[in-house]
Image 1: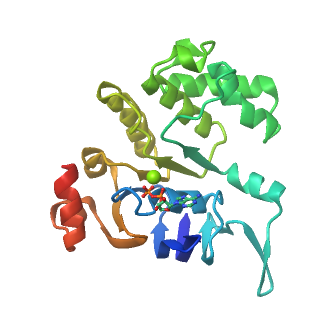
Image 2 (image 1 turned 45 degrees about the vertical axis):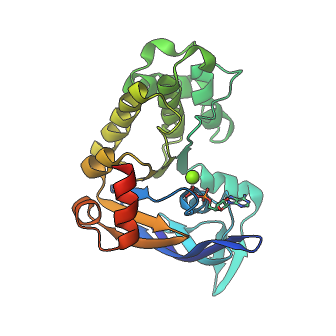
Length: 250
Ligand code: ADP
Ligand code: MG
């Protein structure tokens, strides 16, 4: 589903991604761990073309991200095509990023109606089903600020799902939450994992990684230092840097 090959990305003179290779199979959950500044968010952002890579390439579900191949030439996609491509990839941010002036329901139907041109009635029906799924069926008419952080993040997940994405990316979805609200969000993500949603989740929740991940990836200083099953990476890390990181977060 996701193929990242030789991806490099610099900001100014700082190389933030130093040759990333990563493959994610359909239906699998990949958890990305690593210290702050190691390039985790940048990697997620390159996967849906919020950042352009300097070299290497990424494909999602067989399509190159941000480019079209014609013969053996690559052409950059136009902004409109990039936006269309991005609708196939759901992104859930640390800080929810809901539209504050829209109700929960309107937050969820906004993209399906405006980007996918879904009939409003159909979008509303789908949104209600998604709210049911994330346990917020009774909050359709609330505004984001009337909800707890955990509820807002569950709305953000429902909003991402409304585009029926082939891939869901989560960037520290529980880092901004009070500890007692973390579980309700992780439970929703676990439910999606059980249903076979392909996901890449950046998180420091080691217990979640152990329970849900098919593959755990450890990043440090712009590189994937090691990757493997949760048992391999979390219980028998091969690299000193992984061990040092785990000893701090466990
Ligand atoms: P992580 O998510 O692992 O904490 P990031 O991918 O956010 O790491 O950042 C990696 C490095 O890239 C950091 O040093 C950060 O300051 C830098 N960085 C990220 N985004 C930008 C940007 N838009 N401009 C300049 N530097 C950036
Ligand atoms: Mg980050």
